[in-house]
Amino acid sequence: MPQTRVAVVGSANMDLVAMAPALPRQGETMLGTDFVMVPGGKGANQAVAAVRAGASCAFLGAIGSDAFGVTLKARITAAGVDTSQLRVVYGASGVALVMVNAQGENAIVVTPGANEALVDLTEEELTTVRAADVLVAQLEIPVQTVTAAAVAAREAGTRVILNAAPARDLPPELLTAVDLLVVNEGEAQALAGRGREEPRALLELTPRAVLTLGGEGAWYVDRDGTEVHVPAVRVDVVDSTAAGDAFTAALAVGWGEGRDLIDAVRWASAAGAACVRKLGASVALPRRAEIDELYVPA
Image 1 (tube, rainbow, N blue to C red):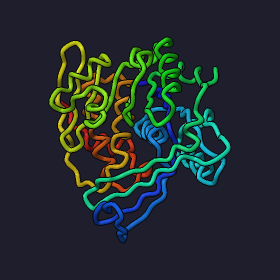
Image 2: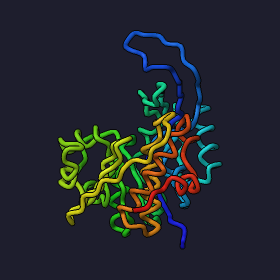
Image 3: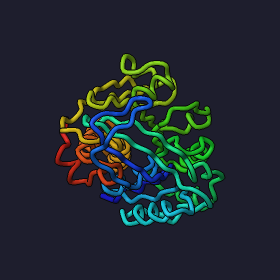
Image 4: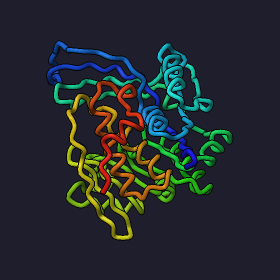
């Protein structure tokens, strides 16, 4: 089987992750139990996750000229991601402050930094998009950049997966270019006004959609009338920070390898489950063998 070629356009952040018994309330200072500093950002996470799931992956993003930027590029490159299109801009890299409680729930504040400078894609960057089998994008970078990449992909016959996180208004030009929308319940509510009670509402936006519900699994729906619930894989949860990124990347890889989309969602669910068993974002992203171990076919 030829190796799936994935292009990811998105954010790169340094994640500063603190573990504590509970998430602090407003004005409260709490003693934590652990701390890690790891590369993150939805774009970088999904690029690394795609490689670990078995694809080749090129990452289009932007990092700052600070020490965090140096570390980010070194770590992403070491993971096997093609970073030849990763921009370095003067100033601060993106940073995510992540708090995780004993149940694996989190609260996150992200400062975009260099990610906001990822605009006006070059012809070389667009060529990378066009050469991929699947383009994966998120919304932690300017929407006009995501739109430009998606339109270029659509024109070249490259499949487009949009993980619409964080939720924001989506221009018609972008929605027209999207083949598959991936959102959680909060994002579904923001985009379509409805969540788990009516996942088909997402089809007002795109022809296919996946609604993820954490421990309650995921729904796949399409305009051909398909509506399938895929149960979550049961594991002990340590940190759910990058579970959605592992899911989205594995979904892209599975679809690119020729799995039908419902089976690709099952495989992606196994990836998400494998991810939550470890602390941290990029360090927890599962390798293919870990995904296969938890994968439950129909």
